[in-house]
Length: 473
Ligand code: DOR
Ligand code: ZN
Image 1 (cartoon, rainbow, N blue to C red):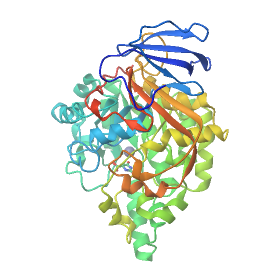
Image 2 (cartoon, protein in one colour; image 1 turned 135 degrees about the vertical axis):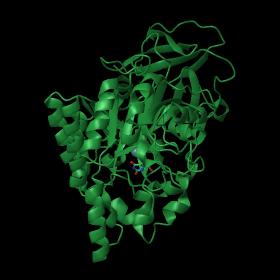
Image 3 (tube, protein in one colour; image 1 turned 90 degrees about the vertical axis):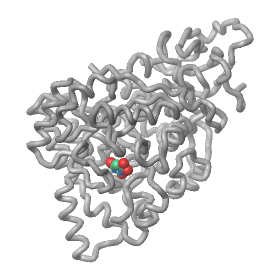
Image 4 (spheres, helix red, strand yellow; image 1 turned 180 degrees about the vertical axis):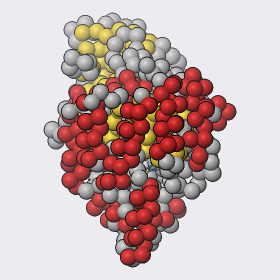
């Protein structure tokens, strides 16, 4: 029985005993042995092996063992703003949420837009990461000539914000495009690399127009944020990206799809044969715009929390294969910056720091029969690795794969307490306090090491996390 003990001291073998573990043909009962970071053996239930005493035996009776989960959308704030979240606290939060691999978004300072700046991200991450980490490169019109060389470095893809409007990035030209022509040219450059190109899809021209109109009309309560970003602002931008992808042959990915209209457009594009992936972030599945009315800055993110009809309407797209994976869009900000927007919502930075709730809320949804544990596992623990070129090294419980596991308990009931969170931005997560959840992360194991168990993160293992080399096809 594991309590607060772990196997960090040595490269101690680990046996997951009585594991009800995921396979593509359903959950199976057995025992999984991890040796030197890899899955060394999977034994049938009746064949519990006799092992030497140096093996750490973790009896997971009654729990489910998933391939370690991947979060395809995480904003650690290094380099640039470690006071908001650094790689140590960001990956500690990931582990506490059962995430064993994060994909780091590139809207940092500087953006990783060429080899030297990409190296700054990697150098910041290396000594601090607790879990494994893949990195996106920033792609803007002005660094389109860098994409070919960036594509050779094992990044998990390119990321572009359509007309990014946050002022604090001093070199926005390395992560944005200004118009359709620039978008087309940029996508032609990424198409030549064969890597997937991910987009934040919001029509900022329309948003700016609506914001000015709302100010003139004095419509400045908390609903300002979502009313100036109606569904059409997402759909317009998604259509632009899909159109440019068809013209250039680029592989694209739409980040944090939040509306039924955009999901439907992506479903049609997939049916037409376009190579496009669809990510949904979990807050758009659980929280509607009434949370923004109530909590203002703390519930402010982009794209915004949407109508209850959109929240309910996204679920069928999880089940029909339109959505490829679920991310968090964990986006920590300084509490003081959030508070500065209490009177004037438009002054607050956008982003919610809640990676620790992603899997628990989805487990609760399994309990409520909104999706199956098998589909949850594909969306959170398998498909992301396939897309990023990390499968079957990860995302697969078979001999030879990395011994990454997320152990979950579907029955456990608990109550969210933001003060106990790992993220530096926990003061911004008070809106979730008191939320009762059935479904909990029991443990997170990265390449055979038990880094999170019994509510504790193993802080000693800073730097144990690896920077991943993705091999997208
Ligand atoms: O709400 C958001 N916050 N949406 C984004 O796309 C960016 C993110 C951030 O970096 O804070
Ligand atoms: Zn994001």
